[in-house]
Length: 457
Image 1: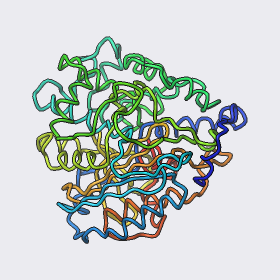
Image 2 (image 1 turned 180 degrees about the vertical axis):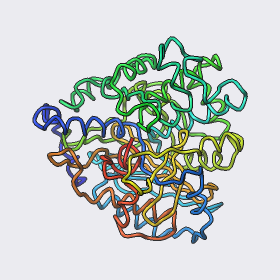
Image 3 (image 1 turned 90 degrees about the horizontal axis):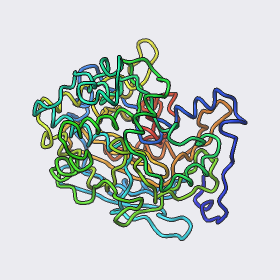
Image 4 (image 1 turned 90 degrees about the vertical axis):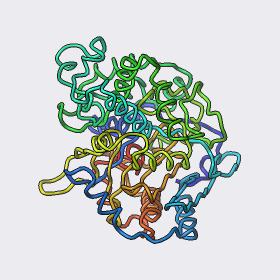
């Protein structure tokens, strides 16, 4: 996809093709892709023992930051077709920040390194930290049934069998609410997204939609669902007697010393930001800017706004044990396979409690999360000790094109993103796409950020 396409003023979508002209199987594939792609979840590899692979990566000697290579690699991401991107890379006290391409391809406004971004499912790391803080205080039992805390929201057998831990590691068997919350999204994505720009949705309604939807996987198996983290936020409210977003702001965001991270109080961002363009696999053509959007539909699963620098600070303090204690951090880093593999094959990604571990193409294991909302993608990874970090944000989503089976066709943007992130972490400069298969499961419909551009939730 070339950036020049966004300069067109005509805005159209192609109604019907996603759900009608394609076979039913393709619609199912798109549905799964969207759930993963709407808020974030990436594929990673990790061992059964929490932290082992990442620990091996952290033990390796990493070369100092190569600023010229970082600049070249980030520019290559833009040259591959991404409208614009900005990133922050850190190694100990050494830092690099950069931006490339356009914040607004219509006006030509350039991207800047200090922009705010909707970070989608990276919010889950913040929500999980808040829950674990309450676990440390003895107010929440991770292995208690959710009915102990919200019996009115999850009644019956499911409320008695699903635990808080299952919510946080996505093994609850509860379905995602995104497609039910946006009826018509597969048939006419542009119209559906436009009509819901300013709609407010209560978290209880999101939970109701998720519980009413048919489960994708049985309880006990990993199946990424934003419903889990909306429920976690409502449990947090019951236990603390405070609004969940207010609690997370005071006890996680402020405790971490973050100055540009917040839950938006309106459909607009407070600070300077890029346009956030959604292509929806070419069915919104040219892509539309959805930077102004009521994010109540994402709630404590994905509504946060942040900057790449703030994300590096957050994950460094989290992995360094400054937001939760050692036992809570061990619990957070106890993982389950994030996708199915062939017999004898190791998963390239494993999911903990709002945190995942991922094996990158160059062989290193890293901790973090990714996030995707309509028009905006973000990815933040770090070595296990939090010393080496990269956070990158970009402003064109679901740029991939699909074949008749609903699978993404080869394109240059995703390999360029992996090359930048992998090179920033390892200090090397892997060729675009080198080893990409090891980091992204074959079913991944998106690109690297866990859910929407990386292989998804």
